[in-house]
Structures are given as structure tokens and as C-alpha cells.
Length: 340
Image (cartoon, rainbow, N blue to C red; front, top):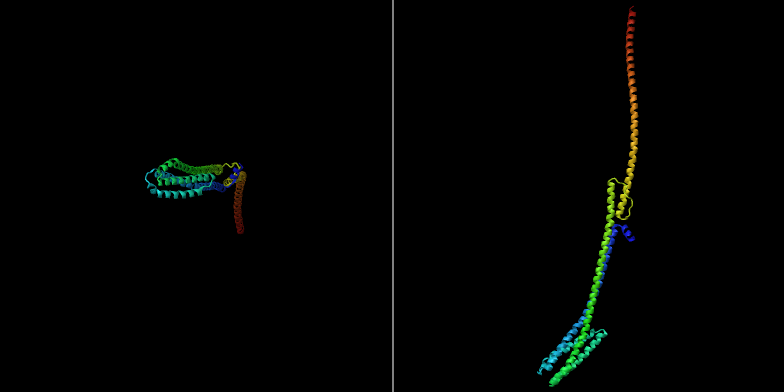
């Protein structure tokens, strides 16, 4: 749980870098394991080719020469033609030389005590085979055909069978080693497939789990941010203030929350100002009404004053007319007085 909280609080860039780093780590581990296992298989294959398989091929070739030599000796001894031995003399010499070379090469490949024991038995059997073959050929050459034929069945055939049996035992030992090496290579192959499969499954499981976790850690706070923005757009400024994320989306949510708080304060201030303005407007309206009443009173007074002024003007005008008339009377009286 603590690990999930740590990952959730990481930035998106760090989370992406982490998942790529882990996937690359698993991929490199898988590649390294593959290289090591391939090297092991290659080494086992080289060991198989260098020793048991190569030795098995040489022993098998040796066995073929033995079988041919046995049949050739039987043909020479059984045949009544004295020239047959001379006819096969070249083949016999080549067979002896090749088998001698094979015997030396095979001897160099013998490492274990079991191999050396089997190889020694083959060498002793070969020597007995060669001795008995040469003895029979000498008897045939000397004209002791019946004795040679009797010795062929009584001694040479059993000796040749012992020789081939010794070769077969050595050949079977090499084939057993080949089978063991093949089984070892197959075991390495199976183990390598298991390791690669395990690494692939781990990569798949980790990648899937981390992809789900990463998707949720990004989409959920974004969904909250979208919901908060929609609430603000709808005029709801009472969104919850709990923020559980510390990444970029967490900072986005925190910014949106701060914006909501600021908008709420701004709306509260506007509402307070509106209420104040409403009170002031009502006071202004009351003042205007009072002023209107006073204005009406003053207008009435002005009307009365104007009426009085009109009356005063009429009186003054009348007085002026009376004064003119009096003045005319005075002038008339003065004229009459002068004349009198």
C-alpha cells in the first residue's frame, strides 16, 4: 500500500520513466539469460561434437573396417584360389593402416577410467584378431587349407566376435555419452524456455498491472478535474477540497480548488457589494423622494411668491399710473397758476 502511495505521488513523467525502466530491466535480464543459456547450449554442443560424437564416428568407422576385414579373411581362407590372398593384399594393408590411425585417434579421446578400460580391451582384442588372422593366412599360404578352415571356425570367428563385441562396447559407451549430452542440451533448452516464459509472464503481469495503475492514477484525477470544472461552470462552488494526488493532475486539482475558493470569495464579495449597493439605492430613493417633496414645497412657495410679486407689480404699476396722473394734475395746476 505504501508503495502504491509513493507511486501515486510521483509525477507522471517519473511514473512513465519507471515503467519503461522496469520493462527494460526485465528485457535486459531476459536477453542476458538467453545469451548465457545459448552459450551453455553452444558449449554443450561443442563438447558433444569435439568428443563423444567425433569418437563415436571414428569407432563406427573402425567397426566397419573390422567387419570388412573379418569377411575378407573368411573369404580368403574358405576360397580354394591361392591368388585371392594376393588380390586382397592391398586392401588388407590399407585396412591395417587406417585402423591403426583410428586406434591412435580414439586413444587420445579416452578420458575416463571406464573409457580407458574399454579401449584397452579393444586393443587387446585387435591384437588377438591380427595375430590369428596372420596365422591363418600363413597356414593358407603354406597349403594347410583344411587346418586353416578348421581354425577359422574354432578360433578366428570367436576372436573376431570378441573383437567386434569390444568395439561395440566402446561404441555403446560413446553413444551413452552422446545421449547424456543430448539430454543435457535438452534440459538446458527446457530450462531456458522456462526462464524465458517466466520472464515473459512477469513482464506481461507487471506491464499489465502497472498500465492499469498508471491509467487509473492519470484518468481518475483528470475525471475529478473535469467534474470540478463542470460544477464550477454550473455555478456550484461547493466542491470538496480533499486532494490526494501530488502529481501534475494533483496540482491541476489544487489549482481548480483554489480557483473555486477564489471565485466563491469573489462571488461573496460581489454579493456583499450588491447588498450594500441595494441599501444605498434604497437610501438614495428615500432621499430623492424627500427632495421631491421639498422641491414641490419650494415650488409652491415660489408660486405664492410669484403671485405676490405679480400683485406687488400690479400695485406698483397702479401707483406709477397714479403718480403720473398726479404729476399731470400738478403740471396742469402749475400752468393754471402761472397764467392766473
